[in-house]
Image (cartoon, rainbow, N blue to C red):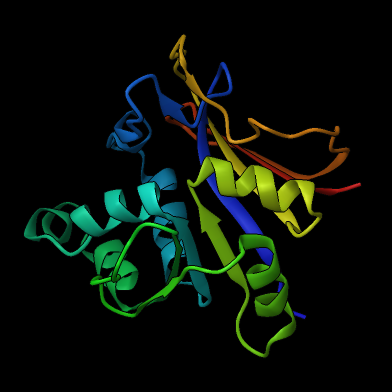
Length: 187
């Protein structure tokens, strides 16, 4: 069975996007060699990336650009080459390279994907999708990067959860730029 992980940046007060839906606060370059090596290491992995429409549109508008290639050449190359799935009821097509558009029932589609042969999957951003898949018990691991910033307002990725999720910590890592990686699995 394929595994599904969530990888998201969150603020110290628990938001994955600010009040304007922006995530750029989590992608500032702090000149931290350890953090940059971690990001490059993550990008060098295999697997399939999953997005909701909003996160997909943000990613697709940045990673294929010359600016992305200049700022993060290795990550940009990997993001553009990796297999990607976008879940949307409103998109007509997915034009970013190696992207499949899925319009069906989210939970049912992800259940099918987990049963199918293939590489593990990572869901990025996509707060409403995280909440739905978490509630359905389909997420195998949560990788959260807590950034040293307080946003005051925004959206959490768990909005809409109806029942508590008990999680067990598996890893913690502090980076020089103040980011803290927290990894959890369902308890």
